[in-house]
Length: 178
Image 1: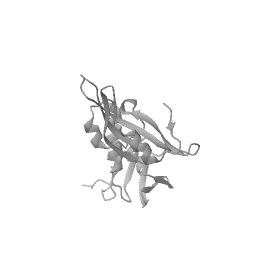
Image 2 (image 1 turned 45 degrees about the vertical axis):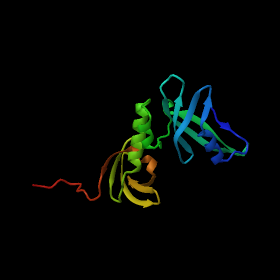
Image 3 (image 1 turned 180 degrees about the vertical axis):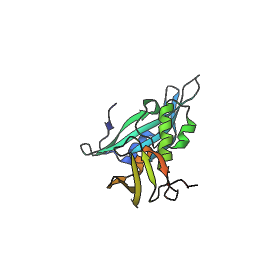
Image 4 (image 1 turned 120 degrees about the vertical axis):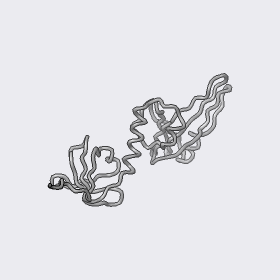
């Protein structure tokens, strides 16, 4: 549950500490892979206990800076907790037996949405937002500008998961007449 901070600890020191190899009473805990996505540290762990099959899991550590202790801290979670973070590398899903299929589906959807290509003039049908349809107008860095009912809205990649249908600008909106 809570957050753990260390006085004066740098971000790199924290990551090094969170991913180090540990051994206690014949049980080993080894980080097989790790990476960061913003302030989320993704890890793949393997735990080996004597006379038992190795156990693997995906870890999700939220990282944050605290002014009070002038150091970095973390909040640890794992796949089983179904964190509301989906930037886990797809390769990590293949390294670990599934524990939470619903969360893995969200991870795959997040990656698919991030790789979606938009172009000015595309018509988007949306779900789960206050607008149900929008037309792509332009792009400002990574954020798209869309228009709906005469109003302009910012549409960053994190909202791409709400797109349920996309009609390309170059597709004819009308059916050919006979």
